[in-house]
Image (tube, rainbow, N blue to C red):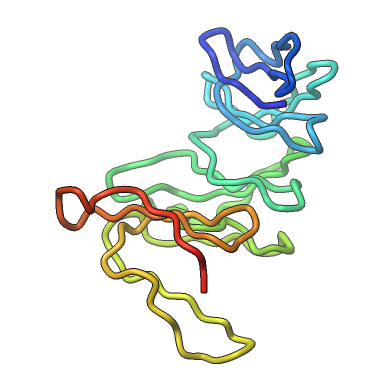
Length: 187
């Protein structure tokens, strides 16, 4: 199933067909977790919530929520921001399971997440610069410490495929037919 945000809140829709189910009329955006058994999402009032998808029962996880960066691979932690500005956002961590006190990663309004937001084992959250352009490089530390340049002057926001074998990035340094969104294998 997928989580859908509508003017009537968030609902889950079975991919194979069938009736949708409203999770929370105040819900806004989020994602399905726990193999489809739950959803973690924001509300129009600026809170972070979790609910079962089979028997909707919204529970507040954090009372001040601006937007998602990611949910950890273990689906236990949410990396998010409370406030944003032209220079970036602040960064916070909260439980994706129960109500608790969020942990401040950075109160400075220059944070953002580029690529994976967590390490594969969910023990570290990752952040970076928000704007600008940079050369994107890859290094396989098991083989060498010399990086391989993948692209020059890419926009500073990128993401990885779920398998981590491809990179999605945008390139807009020169307007025209080469500007766009690209997918490339990671060497």
